[in-house]
Image (cartoon, rainbow, N blue to C red; front, side):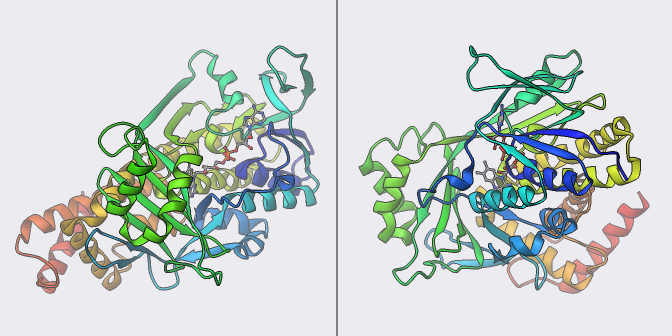
Length: 453
Ligand SMILES: Cc1cc2nc3c(=O)[nH]c(=O)nc-3n(C[C@H](O)[C@H](O)[C@H](O)COP(=O)(O)OP(=O)(O)OC[C@H]3O[C@@H](n4cnc5c(N)ncnc54)[C@H](O)[C@@H]3O)c2cc1C
């Protein structure tokens, strides 16, 4: 049991709202400040940005009994549907029978999480921007403009859940020996919509994450409950096919027609979205330490923003909260140890998922259409089905397990080395034409050697 504390959370996003629920369950008094208005009172314009939830996210929700409530607003995607130019679409199952990632509207999920946190007794204070934080005194300074008078609110503890460009972190950054890095990709993204059929059904196969890999750029689409798909176009900011070069309706239409011919009937819609919707940047942010004494801690994107290509940003943020919960159970009122252990356990793991997410950017945009890559994946899948105790594919470790990300990265690298050697030793292998017995023996031997070190 913990002694009840007066705790502030900066940010009512997905991670801040979940943290509020956990802290309320432990009997703390919780105030959540957000600079935005209450999103529950805002009419969405029909645009729905969505996210993929996987095992780590579900585990954090299930632990406080919220998973089933959220499952009602999620659509299972058990496979990738890959659309290569001039070839029939094909499927790539994500995991074993019954395994799936889940498409959820970010807005709907956030509204629900705020409702649930409020039901638990958390107090939300919207349209209140945290302008500054006094770290040692756990005090928030809240206002709306830089040059106005700010109100000060003192707490026992503060959590910064204020996203990638966190003010809370900004204050910690000004301290000596605070490590910080941010790295933007040259690729940005834009959200577009494929509306439902007139009878409300989905225009594409519903239980898939659709991908149109085109090398330098790619389009993905995730299903929504109302029959639409939210598409994200990832593309370089500058260069031949880029947000900069597509600067007229005519060019955008021609671009969609030649690269995504499947959606011709929606080209007008996509072209309109292209000019109406913002182009956003993708960034990886790393920092350390994440905590200040027993007073302030960062969670979610404020501590570790990653590029979205593994669909793990929110999942990793939810896992932060689950780990904090384990530590609160273990160390009770010793907040200094809770914070120290938390940042120690999470840092190497979130660095690992940052690396994996970056690598998946390369894999999704170019390799999903590469024959050799697909063959390797096929061999891996076949071997892992035959020897599930010896080979769990990297994607499954990250997505369908709670294995530490760091461990998943290490084992994934080891498996890559094995596959490199297998492919080198069997240069004639192709398509369905491979000597299954020989490949199996090669992999088993290589795994045995690696285990011996
Ligand atoms: C294109 C894209 C696709 C993604 N897809 C996935 C996916 O499929 N799966 C997945 O797991 N993750 C995905 N992510 C990542 C995911 O969106 C983030 O990891 C997640 O939203 C982080 O949640 P958060 O609560 O930490 O921060 P945020 O969601 O950014 O919330 C921060 C909150 O803090 C508030 N705030 C900020 N500054 C202040 C201030 N000074 N004072 C008061 N309030 C403040 C903001 O208003 C906001 O409400 C994706 C990200 C992108 C960009």
